Image 1 (tube, rainbow, N blue to C red):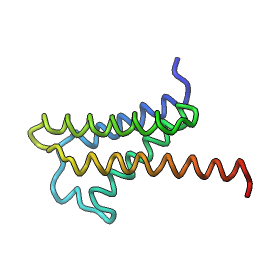
Image 2 (cartoon, one colour):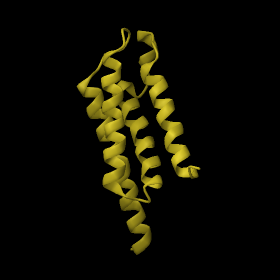
Image 3 (cartoon, rainbow, N blue to C red):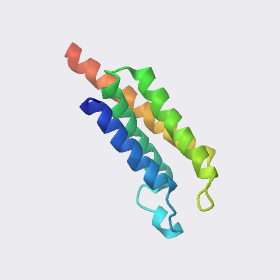
Image 4 (cartoon, one colour):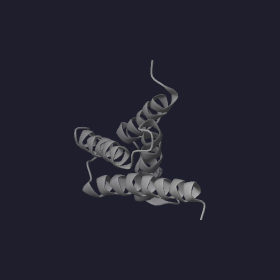
Length: 114
């Protein structure tokens, strides 16, 4: 059976897949942080889930979260109601990378106690 950390990864992956692949009305995609902000936030959360599941391995977390983001963008290209965007994929990668790097540095500072 999967441990709790991997169940959290699967949970967030399914949420991201659902909201990324269902039809959306154009007005529903605008909000206070914008489309790219939502991408960065979603993949920041996913990469932090991977970070815990991979026992704090930065590179594994970034690669898996970013790869998932790229896969979702490719899948959007196969729908009739969504479109694939390189800029969305870049936002996914940035969100995944920044979150894990910050998490690792915060953890390091707590460990060293400067």
